[in-house]
Image (cartoon, rainbow over all chains, first blue to last red; front, side, top):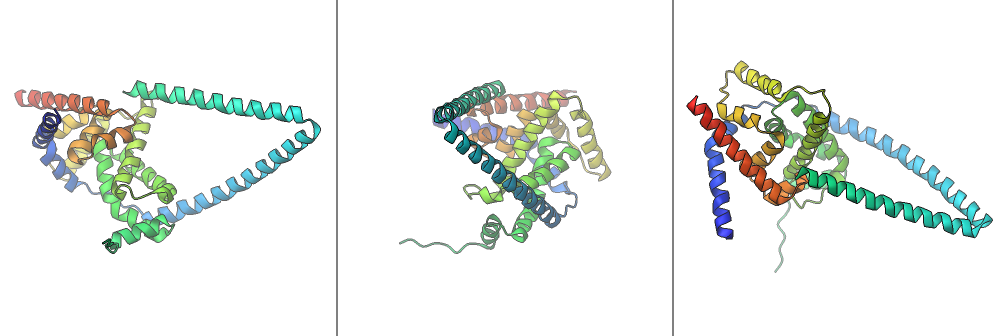
Length: 112
Length: 183
């Protein structure tokens, strides 16, 4: 069965080569890519990325600090409320993962 | 006994690029630029779109080079990124109206070929008339020789769907070329 499949693959490949292989190879050779300053592109994008990462790190630190301070305050004022909030956050995260998984699966089925 | 071959110059450049050396990354991208542009132009059959996609692919590669694990060739990694970007772009364009038609883009390429006094055979027109999601697997499988599972992974579709698109694509090419011969 596998051998028959391989033979059929080889036949299809040979047919494609006969129909288009030579034409594609000639076109390939004739294509002349436009000039691109690759070194400049790398340098510029790296600089942009580093700046963006610095801002993101800073924003992350500030948000984390605020979040931890808020949670500590809540824990000190009411342990029950703190536990309820934690449970809600876990439930929301679980729900988000399930919904995202379902949406991704549906999109994948739609493409096939 | 275990003996390791010394790394080639290309491998050394790749290793330096993965470690974050900008000059090595620029060398690597420069040496793959032609191959990448030719692949994207054949797949997109649209010069403007190909130029944008190549640049976008390079930017993604610059962002993600640190995650490249050398399980595949660097050229295959670039082709995978470019393929995903192309498919995303085509899905976006199908949803919106801002769209230079495929026929207009193909005419542009034909015109470029005529300017350079190059022949533009009917067979390439037939390839251009295939739907983009059929043309991609056809080129990846039969021209570049990638395996079904690699193509399926890059296109985010099952292997069975890749096979059926290849089958339908070949059938359509056969029909188009037969019709052209008869006309």
